[in-house]
Image (cartoon, rainbow, N blue to C red; front, side, top):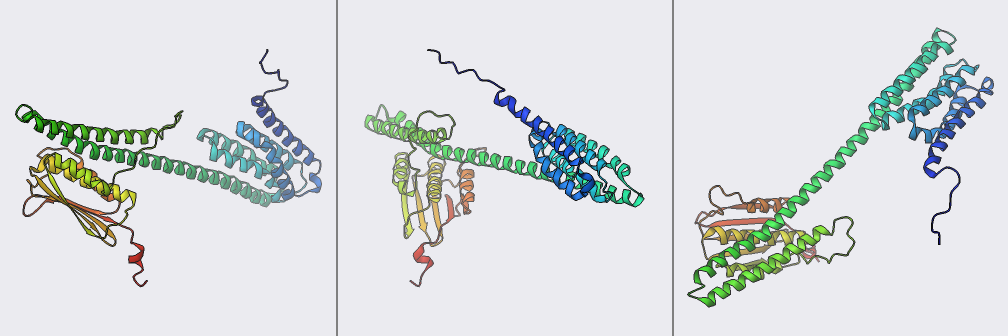
Length: 396
């Protein structure tokens, strides 16, 4: 069975478009020639209106051959202006269609085409003024009208082009800023998630290597902690990668949705992991607990996670305190320890505190991190919260 498409007759759609454009240009010249027969009885404004309506026939040619469309408009306007018996300055309004086409070319075409179009219009319209003028006064007024129309069209086209280019630059800048912000967000998530887990794994591995021969039970406990932490980290990485791949174009299969982002409700698991690394964490809650917006809940959890990572890696202490304060208009997160008072040694290039500052800054909050006067290190973050309905209306 022959499945080949049936033969088609006539020009293809791609060939019909240029033919229609050239046909529109020819029809415009026909309109101009028909108008010449009636110009002895019509004024300049009426002829200009007719030519403006007829210029719609040049739309297809203007898209494909803008300079050719401009030449056709100038030719038709020149023939009509030369044939009219109206000697008022209004007869030069027949060039209004060509001026509008000039503005379109300036607005949409490269600079070389715009300069060429401007030169053509200037060389045709302005020399036509003294040829069509009936006297010095008529020549002066007609020349002023032609020049103002030409300059206005060119300036309007240039203004439109500059505004469009400026809008394009703004869109490109917005896309670039969005990409940068997303890259920083991913970097913060990966750092906060991996740094804590790798720190715990490193400590547990060190403990296991020291007691593997003398205390096998303790070594097995350390290995189990390493396994649990590794699985949790892999699960978090998988959620992050799945979320990234869901935005890739051309994915043929449906990706499973990523798991929920962690929040302050998951502090128990974080405390247990930190305790397995040798640091006991006391968690205190002040104020009335309530549901937090997802971005604030995640940021608060990541701040606590990064601060505990620094305690495990740098503080050289076995105890720290986490205080979560639920205020009316703000959430306070405080992590304090009594260790060495510095989160890193000289020359350290970690990004933990930098990531904390970025998270807090995005939420328009405040962060302070530094040694405590009595020894140890203190991290305190204040995150703005939406005011609860019962607090906003105390009179009810």
